[in-house]
Length: 163
Image 1 (cartoon, rainbow, N blue to C red):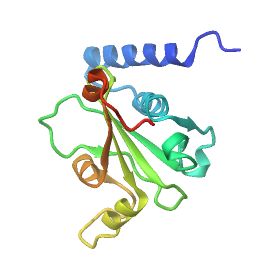
Image 2 (image 1 turned 120 degrees about the vertical axis):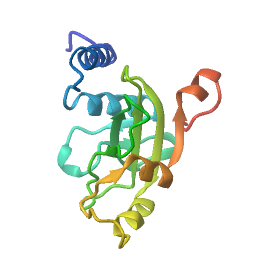
Image 3 (image 1 turned 30 degrees about the vertical axis):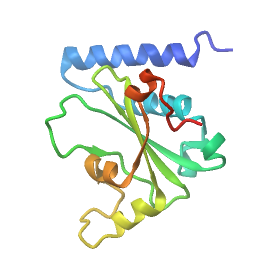
């Protein structure tokens, strides 16, 4: 039995990652991905999988029942900087969609976007795409994806995509 709940540990990870970034100007490697996975699971009704070799991070429940979903996270520290990228997509493996959790400088979720494999595959297969290994800019991903959750709507009590 764990001494601390996962929610408590993620909350502490957020605080430590934000404090470390403010103190050093650098990010703690891997932390934003772990936070993003837990936020996506909680906010979108997903069940995380523990086997990294399968090519996806979660299985959908509710409206996403049975869908295999990759989860990516990106903390945005300076919105004026262009050229931000998302993590490499596992294009050679089985999955249905990719969820991108965008976080603020405190590693709190601000928006979650979801793109289908079909929409992403078209973009990655585009002859003008110079990187064939699954890398994509944040702006391109958002263009292909649908906004499925936002903190603003959540705070206003409006319906988000977590049915």
